[in-house]
Picture 1 (cartoon, rainbow over the protein chains, first blue to last red):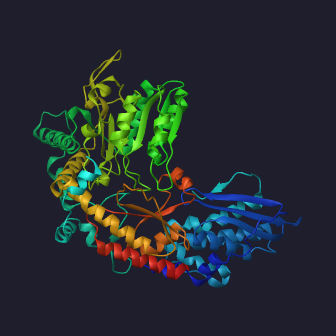
Picture 2: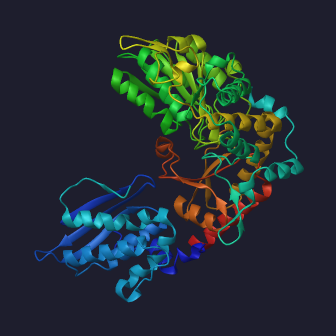
Picture 3: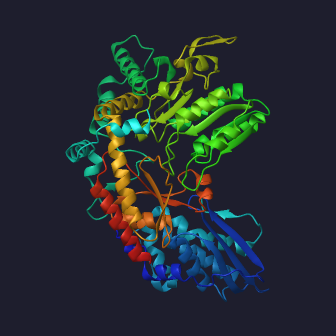
Length: 152
Length: 419
């Protein structure tokens, strides 16, 4: 069984303490709320997307555990300048990373900063923490509804 | 029996606790790279002694048969063991009659039974059901459902900042429309012990029936339903060192007689024609279908174990552990206890400024310390104290002060990682 330090990588702790893009975006044009009722984790993702479907700005607000908060923070650092399609592809990669069997190889080059979350796969109950912001992002990208989304 | 009386009982000695620990095989194992398991999630479920494990095994090896039907030898023995368990439960809670002891799937099932039978029959439009602000979801939702169905109103006894019920407010809530009071004896999220005897008398003065959720009290203190003078008392075997999937609902015979059956099926009938069914007598009227026979027998053995250890002594020892654990937690800066009632059982909910409860739980798990992190199925309690969740250490009589020291060390580790 792994030590917990494996889960709480330095970068995760650092993003938890000093989350990036942690602000309300008044002039956003898409937004979604994500809620995990089991943990009480709650985040709002704000997006500014131009007419070519390119993400011009992204931010988040809310509260949750270190995994959910740092995951949201790291996510926001990877999205600026990406198209909607590219962002959705990142979601798929991230989801595959944290839900893969613990012994599956991870390709860090392909994943960038997201790779620090590979430890999550050893702790199945934390997968929903890591993916909450990402699910909320998908919902914000489509922004077809104001309904909060849930990873429960 | 009051807490004061329990205090007189002699506590368990260190040697006795070490002997008790030998009876619980799961406590011998190591977790997370060879760390000794420190199990402090007893409010979620308790561990099981070898005698309970053995009787379950023996039941399936030697006694397995359906009860109350067969003329053959095995059925006779199985029925005897099942009914023997009922008598053990009856004696444990000082229930007047065996037929007032109904086996259910657990406390939740028991509350739903009372809500759907007694509640449905006696609660009407404009009536009121009183619960408290510290109830587990299972003592909220079944009553909400009845209120919704009947057009009745759910009233809630508030709590103070220590997590104690405001009895003056309770008195004000009671009136001629109050049909049922449903309260917990011990809060699973705060540890508060409520003055049930007094609350029962107040409910009765208002003409209301009272149901007591004993899921968190029955494993930790002597309970005498006649002394408490309650109408319904419910609990779960699995929190009392017994198997999962079995529990009990005590109800006064005259009330049980007046209630319609909960579920229809085998065992709960005397005769069935397509025109009319005659229901069986108590307790079988409320035990439709083949019951959890192995579970009931295991529950009986769990009760033997608790009785042999002594509930008064268990309560006294756990009070020592509670005092010690409170001290351990209060000595760590940045730790805030949630639930500081003057009458408490061994439940310690806490909040840390530096880390979310789930992160606390995760780091503690890495140190071999099992606690619960979350809202403990008591979201209104979390809302009352303005936290999304808490970390909760909950004690049992097989825990030791050394384990509480380990909890303290693990919490320091949380601070090292997150501060």
